[in-house]
Length: 257
Image 1 (cartoon, rainbow, N blue to C red):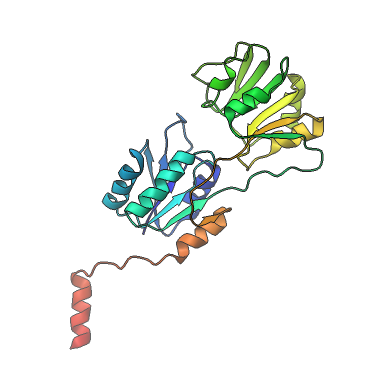
Image 2: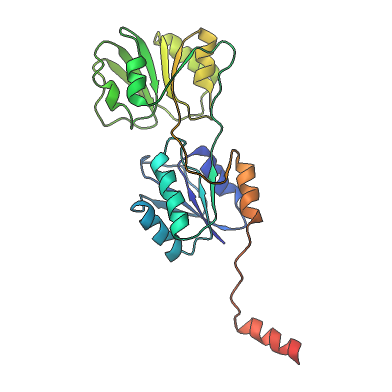
């Protein structure tokens, strides 16, 4: 059994480490220049759309596809669904649960990154925790100051008034609260990606409002929310029959005699 994991998330890496009885291939988009080490085979880069992914599934003898990409990687998930239809392949979506508001949260939900930029008040000091790929809509905001955090330095257009820090999570609530206080942040901007919620807990503790970008719609299909459920799904798949080599034929002849 060969399992292709569309990765780039903490859950994808954990799944690759947990699947010890199958051959794992993890595909990364290549947006992070220094990804963490993973077991099994790792490939970097795109497939060329759904058709290219379908051809890869066929050429590489992939027996199952697990889409464990970021909840906001809508195009990749759509391509995975179409590829699994073109080259019929069992497909599972491993989707981390989204955040839900708790007592004390002051959230404004918006449908996209441009709307998130519009929701930042003029004169605000905003903490942008949305990664380095979606900063362009904020580049025209000369009336606010932005603290930008990403795993690697951003390389696109940036707001006029900003500061950049690079760091890789997970983060502690205490450290996030100290960061918000040090930079006098008065609004947090994040995607509702789920997972580590330390920044939201810190904002809640300090009474800081948050602008959260709603998740895009995902394609239809079976989905689970934990790595453990994904492991059980893979384990329950029927295994391909092994080829009958000379040894198997010899044993069959002995049984017939």
